[in-house]
Length: 332
Image 1 (cartoon, rainbow, N blue to C red):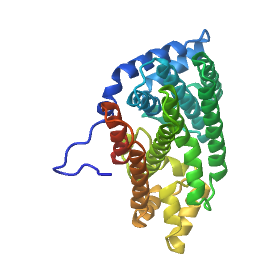
Image 2: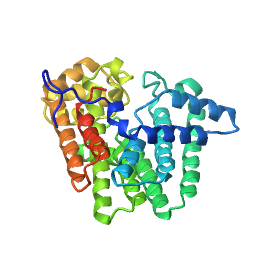
Image 3: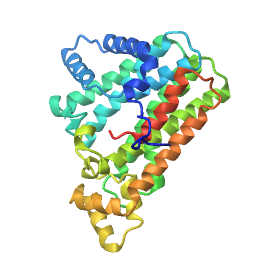
């Protein structure tokens, strides 16, 4: 994967990448607003707060783009894209409570603004509303895919909790968490799109591989940016993962390569949940761990692009391919 350099063509922005799905994204927004309705005022208040926070909406976007890339001409993809977004948002609400986070996308998290109890319960509302919407679509196979994905995400969250404050976390354990906690929903979005479009088993499997690889690339780059990004761009503080006691790939890689003195600094930071972040980040960078993680992310992005080879050339396929490049070239 190539990143932009001086004199090279400018990489498209995310809104530009999603432009072919603009009409579908507008329809998705309408479904989201309609289905977030409730006669419970606090649910409406927190739902409006969440919508106002923005976000990339990548997971529903790739469902919409994949469905169109496969020639789907119906409207059920709007409903299911909203389900994907609701499941994702519910996981964020619960994650922020578990992690005691107070900042997301540049503003206070819902738990910081409304309290932990309200955030957990609205997350539960989003899960239950999602399953109502799945029933409306009327596809038992799609329901099973989403139920399985939701269960695997929950497993990933528990696995991540078990890894917190543990300096012995290995790269395979890290990958197990991100595959379940992050990549599973990307995979489900793409597989569901293929089912809606009536694609054959091979194409469906390839779309699923695209989603899994793309999700892995995005998450690894997120973890890289936690050590090398810009707070203003990211909408969160650098080092938040470390403050929560999470050993992500750059730190895991560094731990296996440094001398005893530096290893002690890194292990203490993980156990205590913080330490001197500047010192930790310097060790991570000096160990070549940023480059290692970036290279792995790029290999996942390349695998995602390769999975789409059999799809016909359309503007929607081009957007999916560009998303794989965007995943590893972004700075936020």
